[in-house]
Length: 109
Image (cartoon, rainbow, N blue to C red; front, side, top):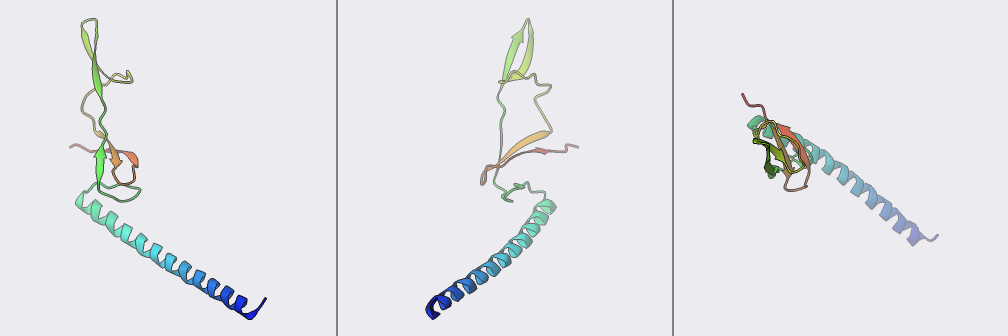
């Protein structure tokens, strides 16, 4: 192995170390920024995606149909599940940025 090969190898290794340190520094800054975002959103009562912290959210809509069973009307969804009431405290949310889906329970007082 010649001197030039050793020099190139050394430069490559030092570059990899610098990149690793920069990546670690970036992750620490991002983690700190994410904590501040969560505190701000919680304080202001803003809903956010737990995966990517985006606030661009959509609600999913269930489609309902009414079945007439011997004179009684019954409200069901398209899977055939009988629904107790139309209004619910549960809200299904979808992040418009990453597509993450979750159920957010809303406390109504």
